[in-house]
Image 1 (cartoon, one colour):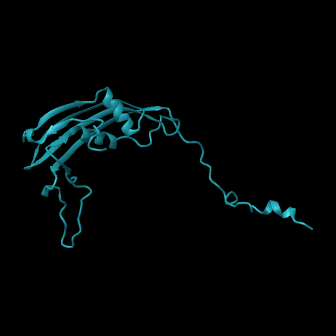
Image 2: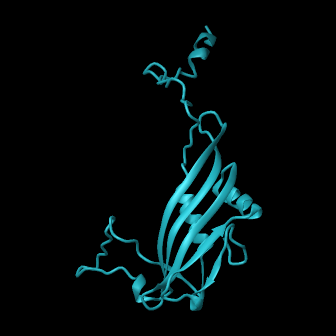
Image 3: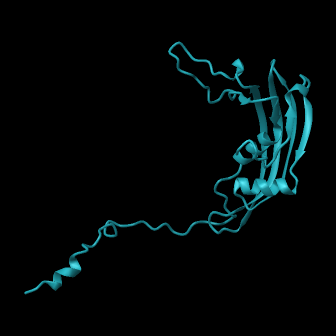
Length: 183
């Protein structure tokens, strides 16, 4: 996405207006946004997308967004291509820091290797300028919760056909020419 393009779901927030006290924000996608999200996520339809967030200042210059995103989407079954409805209900807990902030750096050990604890907190995301987009955060969390292989109840692939050793042997392309030999 270029800087000129409008995101599919957007809710810009001025960082200067965010205080240490959490503010509750409720977001809901309109018809155009749901169509744009369906195209972005490559799904049949986004029936609804909403979020309830608490946005507050984190440490000195960071922003923390916590809450939940809920969505109802329709996808095509990977077996039958019939519509499959799915519900998304995901927690959001994101920390954003300004570009160049020391809080965004991952500490390195004595040998210069960086250690990231897979069970620990995520590294803060970086934003530029004086605005963050809570709508993009919501859309990203919803997108990550989409089942990449949706199946309609009871849908199953047919019996698996394996090739045999004889199937893998290719006939000699010159075998048909052996009978054309001149006497």
